[in-house]
Amino acid sequence: MDNDNGVKREAEATETADANETIDPRQYPPGYEVVSDDAEPKQWSFKYGFRDWTLAALSPFIYLALGFLFGWWMWGWIIIPVAGIACGKIKKREKWIALSPFLYLMLGFLFGWWAWGWIVIPVSAILFEGIYKKS
Image (cartoon, rainbow, N blue to C red; front, side, top):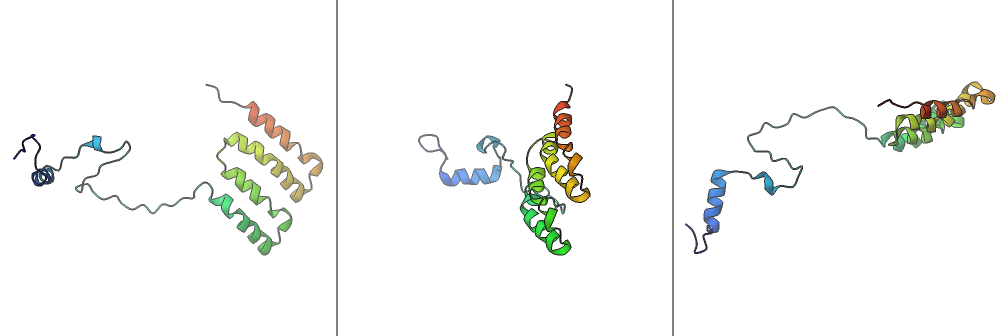
């Protein structure tokens, strides 16, 4: 029954709203998905992944583990900046350039190639900046 101004009473409005159950998508913000109770429940997924920052956050602990377990204190510290660069949100070719000094250090520490290992740094910069994707 309508009031004088043509608006339904609150009790009547809730009864008709419950009976119709029509959902107007315009009443929700963009990106909000309206799911009815009739929809099948989503299956649980048991696939887990790591966030981008996980390795960088764990790198000091990895360094300590490498030091205590294997005695790699001398060059194990390299894991900390390398993990930070590898987990950073930069382009892959820029990651290779940023990692090249640490590759030089690894070549020096592991194989003693201090004299000629430095060539890795300019060569990686030339290669990875000189290569581009054709459009």
